[in-house]
Length: 370
Image (cartoon, rainbow, N blue to C red):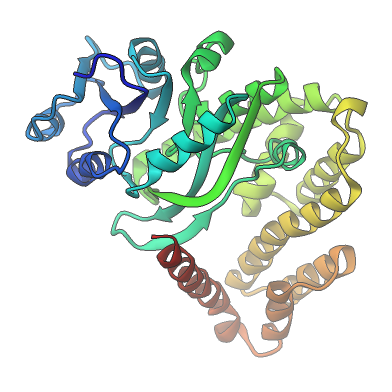
């Protein structure tokens, strides 16, 4: 146990034994050494604590919850127990690169005005397969642009100024899944400064297609929609209904669930946000135009691919053309459009070709960052 650590590495654990050894080891492999490692055990029933204790490192402090509280409440407990000036977040199934703490601590000490700073992360699956790089914006205008559809920071890997986060009230315990999205959004809403750096400093594991994931995804949709609505109410002059915020959320995360009319309404509502910003939050027109064009690419491609998978090639062709008519040329809609003239078998290969391209690109970028 360190007496006066500069940094507290905060991990919450609930039955995380499968990947825990590698995750803990990645913390001890840091080039920065002035940290305590605070682990909140949320009543694990597997070998999680046994694995942690096997490291026998004096920097580790384990707090055992008396009952299972969930991650958000466990994080707030960690914030209050932490001895460090800064809080660094990692989960039990993720792995930090060796310079994670060194680079973030160096940055935030040079820029003490920030309540939080996060790096880029590598998204991996349950088999350690690299899926993509998730980068997040540094500029305040870009951060405000992003809060209407996604978290503007990477939660796993973030370094926070403990006093500023506690002053703000910590994590909102109404949010069980997307507590980070709400925290970063609320910081911006309350005029705290946050930022990000481009360095890739963490591998973040995402588990898909399990029953638990599906159920969590349903709750995440509700929570994200609530945060989106709160952001709309603060940053814009519009007053949309909760159902409209759900539509915007589905536009980016559950596109095939939308009917054509719902898709158009959600797209219109989303675009209108940026033309109805309050004066103090107005964004550069070039950022809005480029940002919307880039963002709408994924929903249109998802919608077109969904139609292809339903053997509706003509409808998929129309979707691709509609994107072109509204936003201009982009390669993926063009490939979708061309492929629909060659039959469903060729068209159905497009998602896999695109996924392989992203994986190859991710490997190239991430290797250069190691």
